Image 1 (cartoon, rainbow, N blue to C red):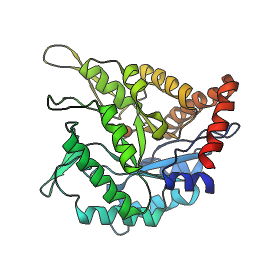
Image 2 (cartoon, rainbow, N blue to C red; image 1 turned 120 degrees about the vertical axis):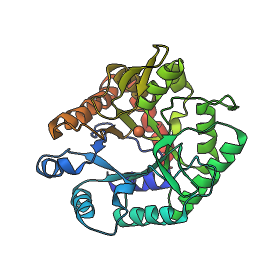
Image 3 (cartoon, rainbow, N blue to C red; image 1 turned 45 degrees about the vertical axis):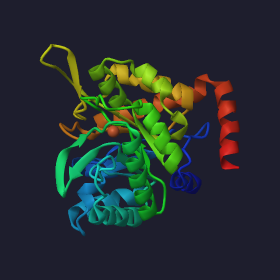
Length: 313
Ligand SMILES: [Fe+2]
């Protein structure tokens, strides 16, 4: 990413790729891939790390991340901020998160629309929240607090969910749009999460995406999911990040890119890691889809250029 795209990211303006430039794609950074990435990485790529893995003062994790950061933009992805939790944000955690932002100057900073801690106890899961006026106020308050602490805007990621709340008074897309409008944060659209939630709850992923406020999207996640069945033999998808991106998720991604143009896109892969070339190939598949947008859509390119010019004015 060049200087202007870095500053666009900090300001919350969605990053978009200029026609002719390589679409920004990346992968999770896992230490098992460190040597291979440094040897034969991802041209014009970026790498994403979970902030919580780098909250110690030094040692091998920081040495590895520093080596990557010298060569690539990084995306700092928080997992434990508990943005959607009922309590106050953990001040110590927020301070450690802010120190990482200052230390690595990530191109992208993101967290989840979920909660994962309560009363000082941290859970291993990203837990859902009901979408109400009360939770909207609280999430906005938490995002304001994070953005104030890090001195820049963050991206908020849509969750994968397995249960829904009868107490919700608005849809997830309405809730997310309101958060972005009120706080000025950007959005991290996880297309696999959309597919997982839609399948589990029995609604259309395409309809969800038609309602999603894509104008705020500053990053896209793609990932693999596993398939199970619930007690009534209905399909139950788990957001497992342990395999390649599924074909229906690629199809949804292609639809999104056709509407937005290229958006920085990251392949998440967190367990049962493949060899680096396989993960890299997934990122390059995303780049091909993004590149197709410019190859196939001359008129959209013109529209894009006009919109970009007005954004940057
Ligand atoms: Fe994600």
